[in-house]
Length: 265
Image (tube, rainbow, N blue to C red):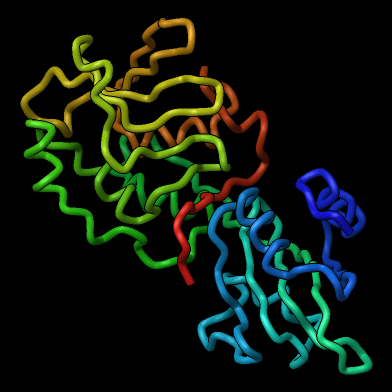
């Protein structure tokens, strides 16, 4: 089997949207398959390494991927993708031969809670609920003081917490967070904190001394600016779940996830 993203679609389609697994040809390179899935879904979580299962693995971390193999899994990497877990690695078949495997399983994603108009919301916590995020904070080590000194401005608190929590990556593999805001639109009074494959740039209008009062501005691919009276984390929550938002992602994805670009076991 000559592995490409296109040929990988065939076994994934064969497995379907439910629970299933396939033993693959023994001459297939498991690392090549892991790399292909990683380029599609982001950095994986390691469930099993050299036959030893991570003791923290539970239903919220992809344990369903191990069920078909009982104690026969040798290695297993897992990705959260919407309402599905996707896994690959190696496992021993019924004859005891170690072979590459591809496995999928249903993933429970908590339903986002409704928001009352005057409710005081922790929007990063809401993002965690919406995406079913279970990993520890990915980037608690960011030196914000050094970055803010370089940018000659403080940055919004919610953005810093959002990035510390999720790290470098993209919501639904589509809306990519910037670790450091881009300054290419600074002459227009904008700092860019995220962007999409549709070439929309998500910015702040940096026009107040207190960055926690900056509004979100979307600079669209055609150069139009659309302003929103909210902060970054709230904006992300709303475009993920509100089908009527002008920049909604809810029309394209029924469930939501975060694709992390960094290796995190």
